[in-house]
Amino acid sequence: MKQKKFMLPESEIPTAWYNVQADMPNKPYLPLNPATGEPLKAEDMYAIFPEECARQELNRTDRFIPIPEAVREKYSSYRCTPLVRAYGLEEALGTPAHIYFKNESVSPAGSHKLNSALAQAYYAKQEGTTNITTETGAGQWGGALSYAAKAFGLELAVYMVKISYEQKPYRRSIMQTFGANVTPSPSMSTRAGKDIITYDPNNQGSLGTAISEALELARTTPHCKYVLGSVLNHVCLHQTVIGLEAEKQMELAGEYPDIVIGCFGGGSNFSGISLPFLRHNFFDGKKTRFIAAEPSSCPKLTKGVYLYDFGDVAGYTPKLAMYTLGHNFRPANIHAGGLRYHGSGSIVAQLLKDGFIEAVDIDQLDSFKAGTLFARTEGIIPAPESCHAIAATVKEALECKKTGEKKTILFNLSGHGLVDMSAYDQYIAGDLVNYTVTEKDVLENLAKSDLDPSKAL
Image (cartoon, rainbow, N blue to C red; front, side, top):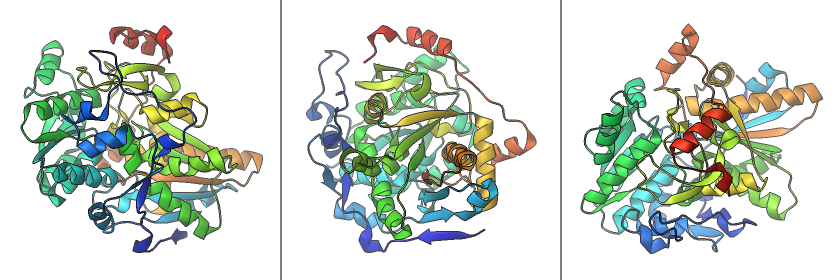
């Protein structure tokens, strides 16, 4: 397994996050108060989110936002993360393409999620919060936030999507080992959960459901704030440490990416690897393609409609401008639990509408085929979510083989799959299946969610 790693010293950890909102030709639509229909102000969100996160959410003027020194110090335990030339994968594919990956799996939590978890936990602690709540799909965000909460002396309650709670017991164990309280969602501990279980006793949960429960707990618990692992602008902002480092590392490699790829659930890791490079398309004449790889069982970018929708099932969140399948969408029980979300972040939605990024949907079997090939050629077992980015990379590399073009491809390895081995067991045994969503399915679910496609943005 021939590899070449491009490393940066600790001193090169970024000192500021990149805020793409300041540079976007068309700004993302503002979140709306569902009761009044009016755009939200930062102070409208203070009751739920850490105040600095609320301000960052709506910041459209500052291109770079300083990283607090306490957060940067925590970053130094694992950043800068390696950029790796995947010679083994290139050789197996017989492609002239040069393939690089940014290895975020080396964080203490095993994924990129820690980049925002540390920031949000820090901001919550700074304003006197004692408790935080959140949701988690596959458990990567929950594991990262459990670590971050302990690092800053906070108590954490996690609502974990029930199917993932059952499929991924060791992700649950990681959270509990770090000291978090973990509840399968939907649960009987909240009004939102009780309503869902009453209507559908066998409901296996979704990220939208878990968000509803976490929000409800935050609203009813003193000195408690809600923090989110993806979708929102400030989360995508924190993840730009990935791309900012990758820029410098690609310079060390003597190349610049023609294609940048990330898997896509709500937008955090795709944004993290892509947005710093995207600014060079805006201003420096670069022509890099940016590809978001989502599951074909939850295809909001490729089959969804650009509408204002709730970010959760119960309708507790503000209305967000997103490509959506409808907040009542019930995703199939695929193993890439972190990608089972009905909508997209508003930054990514606007960029997709404006043609600055692309999206592809990936079948579950194709994702595991690519992930297994990557493991055998590069020696790293990827998380099921990351397998989608690898599958998209393989597709582009094989296209280069067909055309003879020598392109440079960069993808984000958002996390390892060492606690997802039951998924690989099922793949190897031939027990996994594909799930697809048709445009008819989407329209039917939008109607159930009281959304009108004719009102698309």
